Length: 282
Image (cartoon, rainbow, N blue to C red; front, side, top):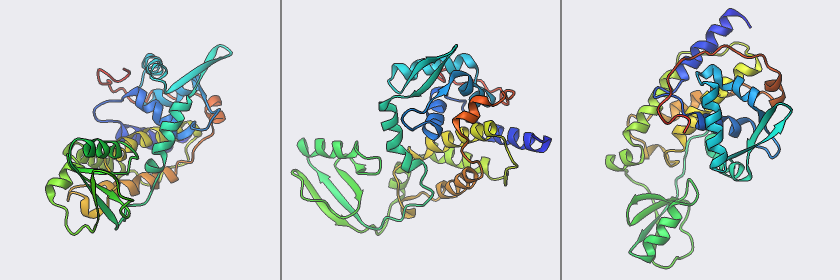
């Protein structure tokens, strides 16, 4: 590892760190979803610690976060030698698989065909609520009684008025409701953080894993917090598509290391020293 590569890695980690501090359980979920989602895939405590301590996370915070994830049914562990191996449970794999296509889709939404669903209480609202809580990119609520969904109108459903729709204009109030200010600020922050770094130098597997985890974590926390919508729905200050381009350009240059490479990697020094938020591990 050359001095230039080490400096580039350190600068990138510092730039990509969460401005509000790291939520350790969420970072672990991002790592497992990116590199250990397959059935039977797992990582030892020692290797996981090597991946995320350079991000400014203390080993004790990792232990607390793993306890929380086991309690919530996301991960499990088994003894191997003197240590433990951690892996996603079937529930955790299902949850990760549901959002993986959205997280790793490098293309912008270009949906042109839409349909509208209008409900009246009480049974129609219950049905609309159920549809809205289904697939991540299913029904988008415009207000309490109205939903918008991609594709042609489905078969008739009791208690819902259903109509094909062509989007002619999206008002500012709806754009800002779909993409609220804190989300726009988070996206702009990541977009700015990615701008100055350019092509990464040759990095060893552990440093690639550190950066991939941090990058996927930041992007995941943005892309899963808004519906997938074409440009006419975007506020004027939404930087999502610029950010998407930068995220996938960098991911392409950080090949995913194997878990076996991470198990045998030498530890890195802690790169960051950022105090976590009060509930970071919990």
